[in-house]
Length: 343
Image (cartoon, rainbow, N blue to C red; front, side, top):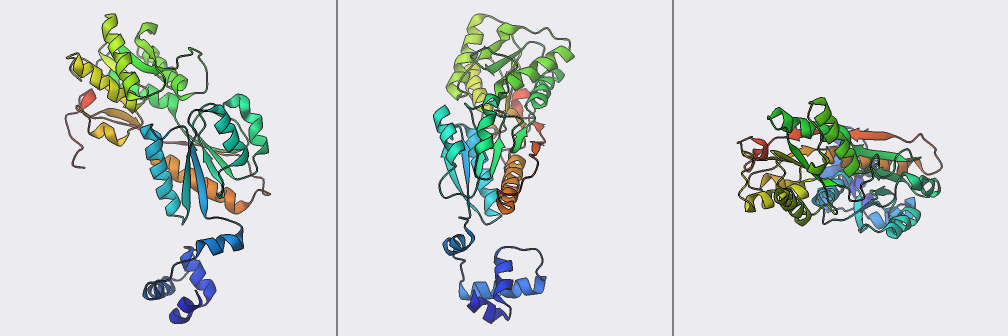
């Protein structure tokens, strides 16, 4: 750093400010320092920096399972957002195990400065665990609400309502749904229950009778389970002209089952999913979906976590709740004949 400072004719502190992307550096000075960095091939020693600051320059991300496309793509977005702040990311797969989730929430991830945590088994009944967390933490998802820590999530109810309204607007009035939680408990703070709530609200507002037999319980949300639930719907003899899958991987399985049965999509049955994963652009037909604002969730969560890390654990600030914007992405499975393959 001293060599860069000498070549650029500035102080070591100015070089540090440029390396750490501090905003209050004159553009001409910044350019001169960056030229010197390039000429000398300087690379910051993050390990040494961590020893001095007590930080690692790495954050953790704990998600239920990377097999779920949504969480794999969320991890990609978090990594990109962290890189923009000069941070690395360690990703942990919780695996749907309550004890693993408790261990991570209790101990964090080793060699990280803070954690983005998306539990699947812990719930609001476990709020007391958050009172003893000894590291910066931002919650993701719906499982724990009202805790003493920052929380970034999505509009599950209103987004599911909008997805169902999208089908209603296309003249569909017998709308099946795949992905309800198998335990049958209602009024829970889980994505499945919240999305079912939005689905039912849309039916009620449209004056469409709710038919419980058109709701199919599925877990986990994998393609094969979406296909099997759709096959059961078809075998039941129940008439339906639309299908709302509570995530896109279920919808991919549903498209497979409908195609096997010779059911035309969207002519006979319109299909919409939830999450807007990349695969949906390449199914045949391409999949309409809810985009829940995954990129915004990742960026906001990383920024909140950095603020907590830089503020230190001794600084008490009120917990914040942030919900990302969502929108409906219309593709061929609900009647849009345009193609996104070249975009």
